[in-house]
Image (cartoon, rainbow over all chains, first blue to last red; front, side, top):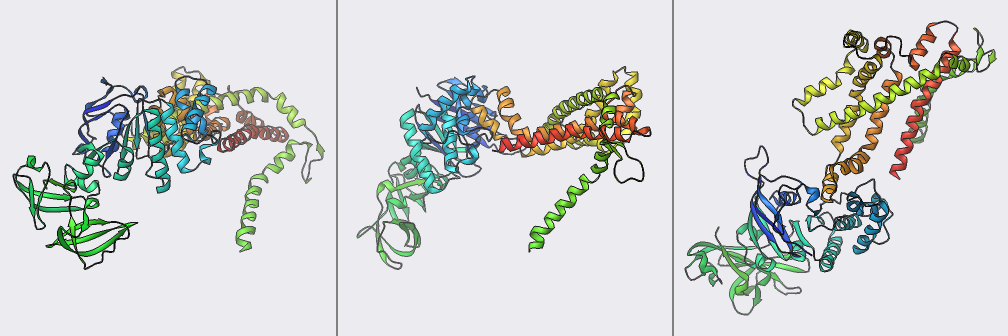
Length: 344
Length: 260
């Protein structure tokens, strides 16, 4: 039975600091869903997680699980599990005893806790390493064990604090697959902290973007990509195009690249505004806004072309094998879904 | 390269071993001799009279007293040192430099002066002499235990305890299942040092104990003060080396077992 996590006005002010590390965070994570808290280093995302877990006391605000206020409860009685960036496996215990720790802590026998632990070891596909010392397992295995250990505590909410950032890309992908699989199996309410928009997109249902301790955006993943609330959110979500211009009262943005209507932009009101264009959604075509390719940057399989239109550079992701060359004149199709406007 | 990488290290190891073992040779010879007069290079009559006389001089009682004293000092000084070190590392105290200075002061003060001064105080306060000896030796051992535990707490990762808390562990469970096992190597090292302070002390035991608390060092000194007791002194000194040696071996075995 999964639960809802909600935080209201969560604030943390550290002694001797002028600005709060976290300022009035409001967030609701629906039962069984996964919310990613995305933000750059020092944005307060780990602080938020520590406050939710009860490892630090908030300066203000509340943490509720299924409507019950847990703000004053100690971490050990909240039933909120946490997996840290480092696995933090207890070095004096075997893999199995690490996983069975929560059962031991609740008073079960060593034998009983080990039996329970085996189930969770199977769940993370590490059935045969239970008797090993934690110093004898690889980094990827250690993080799986850490995940199994937290899950074995049957937490009502599981917090993941950049748990895969120290792993190589292949292991990261494996861990993402595992977390998705566990989500299907366990119906667990999850909060993931990450600085990686790809990780957020791979694992979460919704994304909350924290910048300088403030929640600047909260939506589903697709909206965070295509309709970011601020310039900073756009940059964090990997947006590359910011075009300065003027928004009229009908929701059309005017700039050197022309007049482009933006869905729902009327609500922003007329005035100076920045047009954001999602580079992955722009297509090179026979018709559209004409420009000259000024440079090409490979980004792995695909590449990014800088297309200069009347002195403004628009970045476009080209499909694999595109024959576009530097100096070539191309036309760009900018679908309305790729457009958004924000105030600078 | 062979000289630098093989011969030199072996030679220095050999020298170091000789430095510790050579002084023991005459003691071993004395302990195993019934008669050894000048100028003979080796004892004229071999035997275990030394050990027999040691037993007759009340060595068993002295051993029991020394062991009790050293274990009490080890237990109290390790506990207090660990608490002090934790407070210093976590900056739980005001003026930590002053507190550390006071804790480490016994290293700088001559024990003879301290013991003489406190002797009067202990008498006036009517503190039983054995309790007073344990208290003073604990103070003498605290600098060592605090120093060792401060280094251990400095390197200790509080993240393990935070993880344990999110797994539902109470403060007591964290103490017994996480903190003490993780700090066990440092705790055992600190306890060993404190044990040695208690086991080998002479000045404080003599002055505060008023000569009534006969421990192994007191017995060795009183026997050594007389003449013709060389065999007894040697035998007692040899047996006095054993408990610390056994402890060191036990601790190293424990560490090897833990690191497996």
